[in-house]
Image: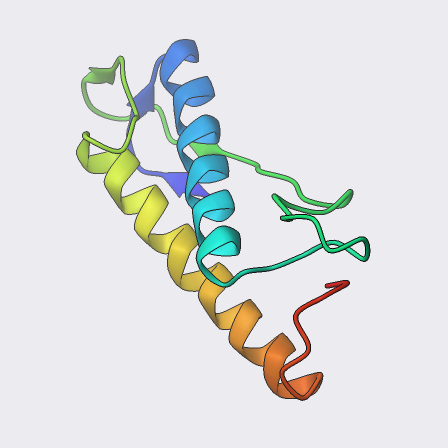
Amino acid sequence: MLVDGQLTPAALVNVVITVTEAKTMVLSEWQVRTADGEAASGTSTDSVVVAATGRGPALSYAGPATTVGWLAARTTRQAIEQICAAKLARDGGRRVGW
Protein backbone atom coordinates (compact mmCIF):
# COMPACT_ATOMS: atom_id res chain seq x y z
CA MET A 1 0.00 0.00 0.00
CA LEU A 2 1.32 3.43 -0.90
CA VAL A 3 0.12 6.44 1.07
CA ASP A 4 0.74 9.84 -0.47
CA GLY A 5 1.33 11.48 2.88
CA GLN A 6 3.54 11.59 5.93
CA LEU A 7 2.74 8.85 8.42
CA THR A 8 4.47 8.88 11.78
CA PRO A 9 5.96 5.55 12.91
CA ALA A 10 2.92 5.04 15.13
CA ALA A 11 0.57 5.68 12.20
CA LEU A 12 2.48 3.15 10.07
CA VAL A 13 1.91 0.52 12.74
CA ASN A 14 -1.70 1.66 13.08
CA VAL A 15 -2.42 1.23 9.36
CA VAL A 16 -0.97 -2.30 9.42
CA ILE A 17 -3.32 -3.13 12.30
CA THR A 18 -6.25 -1.54 10.45
CA VAL A 19 -5.55 -3.56 7.29
CA THR A 20 -5.16 -6.78 9.29
CA GLU A 21 -8.45 -6.17 11.10
CA ALA A 22 -10.24 -5.52 7.80
CA LYS A 23 -8.85 -8.73 6.28
CA THR A 24 -9.87 -10.78 9.31
CA MET A 25 -13.38 -9.32 9.30
CA VAL A 26 -13.89 -10.26 5.64
CA LEU A 27 -12.61 -13.79 6.22
CA SER A 28 -15.06 -14.13 9.09
CA GLU A 29 -17.96 -12.74 7.05
CA TRP A 30 -17.17 -15.18 4.22
CA GLN A 31 -16.94 -18.01 6.77
CA VAL A 32 -13.44 -18.98 5.69
CA ARG A 33 -12.27 -22.05 7.63
CA THR A 34 -9.01 -23.88 8.19
CA ALA A 35 -8.58 -27.50 7.13
CA ASP A 36 -9.67 -28.39 10.69
CA GLY A 37 -12.88 -26.39 10.31
CA GLU A 38 -11.81 -23.57 12.63
CA ALA A 39 -12.35 -19.92 11.73
CA ALA A 40 -9.42 -18.65 9.65
CA SER A 41 -7.89 -15.24 10.23
CA GLY A 42 -5.29 -15.48 7.48
CA THR A 43 -2.57 -17.66 6.06
CA SER A 44 1.09 -18.23 6.77
CA THR A 45 1.96 -16.16 3.69
CA ASP A 46 -0.08 -13.03 4.49
CA SER A 47 1.91 -9.82 4.53
CA VAL A 48 1.26 -6.10 4.73
CA VAL A 49 3.64 -3.54 3.31
CA VAL A 50 3.02 0.17 3.75
CA ALA A 51 5.05 2.91 2.12
CA ALA A 52 4.48 6.63 2.56
CA THR A 53 5.78 9.46 0.39
CA GLY A 54 6.45 11.71 3.38
CA ARG A 55 4.61 14.63 1.77
CA GLY A 56 2.25 16.92 3.63
CA PRO A 57 1.52 17.25 7.32
CA ALA A 58 2.40 14.37 9.63
CA LEU A 59 -0.48 12.01 10.35
CA SER A 60 -0.27 10.52 13.83
CA TYR A 61 -3.10 8.02 13.44
CA ALA A 62 -4.30 5.64 10.73
CA GLY A 63 -7.12 3.73 12.39
CA PRO A 64 -10.42 3.09 10.60
CA ALA A 65 -11.89 6.37 11.88
CA THR A 66 -9.27 8.37 9.97
CA THR A 67 -9.38 9.07 6.24
CA VAL A 68 -6.21 7.12 5.49
CA GLY A 69 -7.28 4.22 7.69
CA TRP A 70 -10.78 4.10 6.21
CA LEU A 71 -9.33 4.06 2.69
CA ALA A 72 -6.84 1.33 3.63
CA ALA A 73 -9.57 -0.80 5.21
CA ARG A 74 -11.96 -0.29 2.29
CA THR A 75 -9.30 -1.21 -0.26
CA THR A 76 -8.35 -4.29 1.75
CA ARG A 77 -11.98 -5.39 2.08
CA GLN A 78 -12.53 -5.07 -1.67
CA ALA A 79 -9.39 -7.05 -2.48
CA ILE A 80 -10.11 -9.88 -0.02
CA GLU A 81 -13.75 -10.09 -1.16
CA GLN A 82 -12.57 -10.49 -4.76
CA ILE A 83 -10.12 -13.21 -3.71
CA CYS A 84 -12.81 -15.06 -1.75
CA ALA A 85 -15.29 -14.88 -4.63
CA ALA A 86 -12.71 -16.19 -7.10
CA LYS A 87 -11.68 -19.00 -4.73
CA LEU A 88 -15.28 -20.11 -4.18
CA ALA A 89 -15.94 -20.10 -7.92
CA ARG A 90 -12.78 -22.12 -8.55
CA ASP A 91 -13.54 -24.64 -5.78
CA GLY A 92 -17.25 -25.05 -6.47
CA GLY A 93 -18.32 -23.33 -3.26
CA ARG A 94 -16.14 -25.36 -0.84
CA ARG A 95 -15.29 -23.22 2.19
CA VAL A 96 -13.28 -25.60 4.40
CA GLY A 97 -9.50 -25.75 4.01
CA TRP A 98 -9.01 -22.53 2.14
